[in-house]
Amino acid sequence: MEPSKLQFSKGEAIRFGWNTAKSNLKFFIVFFLTILLIIIPLSFLSDLPMLLNKDLEVISSVLNGLTNAYLTLVLYKVWLTFAEGRKPTYKEIIYTYTLFPRYLLSTILFTLAVIGVLIPGSLLFLFGFLGFYSLLNLGFLLYIALAIIAILIVISTYLYLKFQFYGYFIIALEKDVGPLEALKLSSKITKGVKGNLW
Image (cartoon, rainbow, N blue to C red; front, side):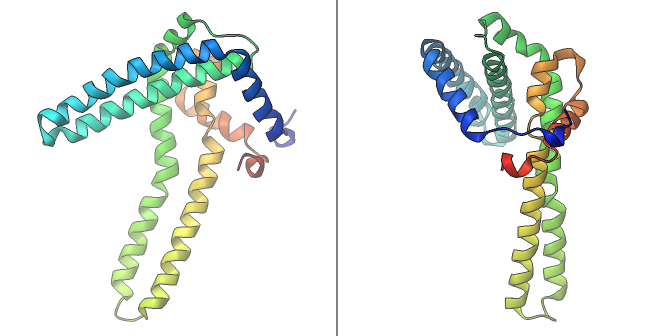
């Protein structure tokens, strides 16, 4: 079936998630408590450079970002395994570390695509604002600024909806998909259904 022909029910998706959570409550309680026990020390360790020296704030931010990215990848594994109709084993969950480098690269590309659109647009607006400040009424410039920001947010949201499923492909296809290909596959399956996803 063509991706553009694929449809899904939001209500059915919510029901599936709710029923899966209810029938596997013990697993999710243990899983999230384990995650919590991992996050607290990791959060402390990632904040340690900044606590020792304020100049190391960038290192702390990077470590926090890496921790969050890895935990997100673990969650993808759990969700996809339940979507396949089975409960994930802890061995499978731990195995996700082997996929982390390609997931991280995809995440960087995804972030550049989604947020990167806002940076040049914002700079363009800033230079335009400074250049035409003396020629135009300030109120008119405000309307232009709001229009540019609105357009950039729409473009950024569109790119987010288009590429958001890259992590699932990295988990589902494992070593058979690279970072760029995962983004392309996400683009393919969201074709024609972005409105429903929104």
